Picture 1: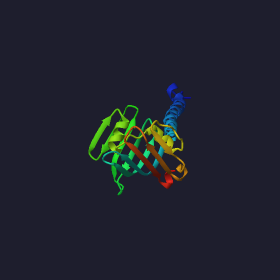
Picture 2: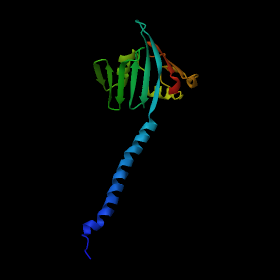
Picture 3: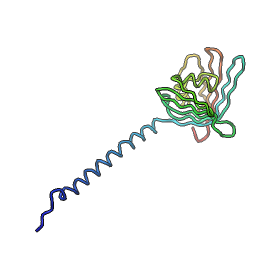
Length: 173
């Protein structure tokens, strides 16, 4: 009887071990991705912002907001549905793209002001859209119609005063 070399004897077992290791390694990132998606939020609809300054600025557009206060993306659309602005942020900084112009900053509030004409408290906005009435100094919120997809927040101070209104799309509630 011919003896098989030792390597050939352990080859099937080695294949099983390597296969299990590969599958185990693949499973971990998928779980992490599921956790990240679960922690992320997504809303779409229309927003209007009126700033009571000398120019009486107003801003109205469609939007998509996704992510979390620490990292996310805000897309702003014109009435025809084309992207007017893309704002992306992480803890490291933020990037605003308007057409071919790209602006980077360490300050998310600075880029929001540049885009809309007024500072908007992003962390609180995520809470407000979830129906949590998070207090922000200088802002008054009306969440009484959030179950209908409507939100109103008014900045009383510091000047200039501003009024933010959001109407969510039916499927974004």
